[in-house]
Image (cartoon, rainbow, N blue to C red; front, side):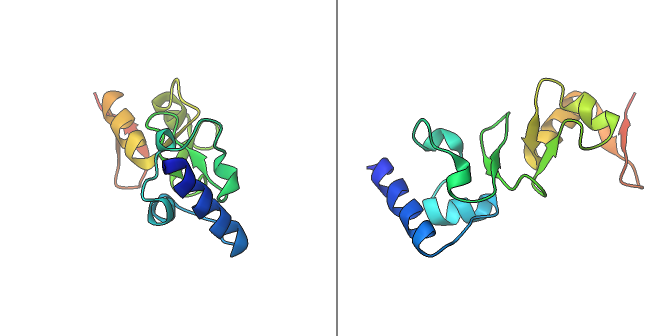
Length: 112
């Protein structure tokens, strides 16, 4: 049943030449936004320029809803240890685990 729903939505997106660009849009069209809810072998590239969070599996915009190893500062790389890319929410969780915070200049600093 879910596979039929997904297939119909993908068919509609292709027919109307719609590319999804955010987690909210994925949820709006499909009713969910986590890769675990899609069938095995599903490719997020079929619905837009998107990627999945390595930690939670949410489908996200790779440019403004995710943090990537090597794309930010060294502190980000330290926070992301073990993950290639994570969503904003998971990054916040990982920051807390590694004792990082944002300073007033919007820079990551490690708390003692």
